[in-house]
Image (tube, rainbow over all chains, first blue to last red; front, top):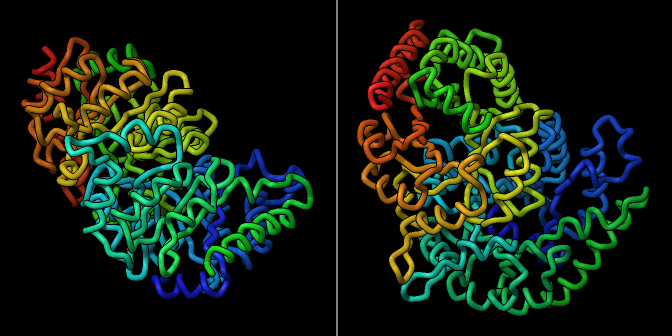
Length: 274
Length: 274
């Protein structure tokens, strides 16, 4: 999916909501455990309930890998289901991969290839190993790299604020350096929402790129603040919520409640998009 | 496997060789493609031929993920086979994972849990997201984090040498900061061999930790130089070779030649261990 198609989807749904499918089998409603594939059954119900309000889905690969091949089979079934709704959502592998060139090429194939088991539109990538660890992900047309810049966790402070003699911080160095590896048509950045005032600064370094923003909801970020500082002309934001939507309710009503939570966020987003 | 057991293995085999199982299906000998699981057949033959000279195996997860669930099934079969030789080798998932705490916990389960599909001894982890992205991997007894510090690729220069006002570089900051998160009993660092003189500096920051050293062979590093600057009393090094061993020959003799290449490295290593 290219940028214009993504922007059209945002305009059409009046939403820039991304739903994180961090579908931990220990947190899904108990009654689903009798299903043949509880995680897929959970994801399918969540997707059906949230799709009208959501422009992107972001399965975090860890929650599938933790159950081994069985877990990855649930992910494949989820992706197959999402591909049936191909033009209605943007699909992000939250995988945080990155390795030397010939290895990143394999990860790119794993997640972005149309012939592969998953065929995502985008993948999150870690910047530590530099340009040749990121570049192979750009070789698939209309697919995206979403590079970690400023993350939403406490540990972000350990290295991402490491500053040079001109007080340029590592995450700023990542934004400026990597900004030259891709374009606003194939590169986004992960920028955590827990520090919304940082978005002014981030927009100085990445004025035109889409930003994937985790940390709204369970991690404490404010959607209003993120939009105040982060929105640009064609939106330029995908705001993720995982636990706040998918685990909002643990009864047989879980999907209905997830849909309501997504709708609440969509309506708030619509008001900022005006 | 704990540090003493690893050191005992090194003494017994007079080797600190790690064989990287980057088993790209496009590079394995053609005649194996008729096997039911060519990648597993390749790995099994390589393991049988190299085990006397090798203390560790390091499958890079990318080369299995690139073939989707089928590829991960080959990895599981490889791990099952390696577990039959449980006390003869140390098993490293070269996965370069790392995410917020609750997510890294899932990756730790995926790769380190005894109940999981893989049950590795160690996993490579990317440092960018800081302490809470690394700590969950320490929660499995006698298992190891191998944290990226200075990698062997060209892109290492992009961020790993980013320096603060006292000229401390990011990879040095990673060595010193993360050195406090784990101990020399559960934390190693990845330090590339292409810059062997750097090992003097690395040993200032990590005098007692084991270092996993990629980049010898295909990537151009010198084993002699690495040992000169990197060896410590109980060895403290695992030196990896992937392509230089596993793809040394592409005929029906591939395993025999791989064994010979591993033996050459083992014999050179034995001379430095004296």
